Amino acid sequence: MADIKASIDRKANRRGAARLAAVQALYQMEISGAGINDVFAEFDSHWLGNEVEGDRYLPAEAAFFRDVVAGVVRDQVRIDPLIDDALSKSWPLKRVAAILRAVLRAGSYELEHRKDVPARVVVSEYVDVAHAFVEKDEAGMVNAVLDQIARRFRNAEFTR
Image 1 (cartoon, helix red, strand yellow):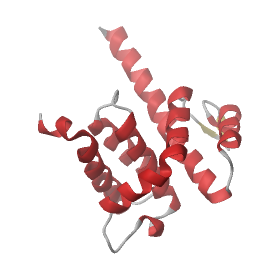
Image 2 (cartoon, one colour):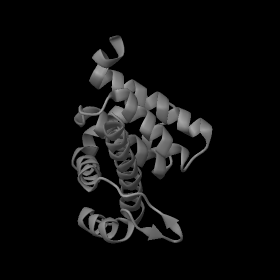
Image 3 (cartoon, one colour):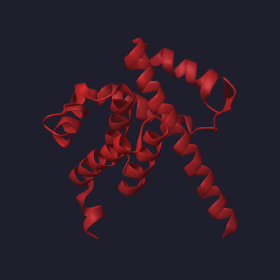
C-alpha cells in the first residue's frame, strides 16, 4: 500500500511541476511571441527537471506539459470567451495580468479536456500555481473563475 501511495505522490508532483512549467511556457509565449516549438525545445533542455538560476525544478511529466500547452494554443480562441464570461464584466480577460491569463487558460483547458483529473484537483493545483506568482486576492480570483468553469464542464462532480 505504501508503494502505491508513493507512486501516486510522485505522479502528482510530476503533474504539478508540469502545470507550473505549462503556465510559465504560456506566459513566455505571450510576452515574447515565441512559438510553441521553440518553447517546447527550451523547456525540454533547460527547465524540466533541471536547475535554472539556482532553483531546482522538479521533474515534470513532459507529455502532460505538452498536452496543456498545445491544447491552450489550439483552443485559445474558444477558451478566452469562457474565461471572460466567468470574470466580472468590469474586468475583462484583456485587463488581467499576463501570468494570470496563462494560469486561467491552462486551468480551463485542463477542466474541459483532462477528465482523468478530478475538477477540484485541477482548481486547487492552479490556485497553488497562481500563489507562486501573485498575491492572495488574485489567487482567490483564479479559484472563483476556475470553479465557475469547472461547474460548467463537470457539474456532476460537484453534485455527488
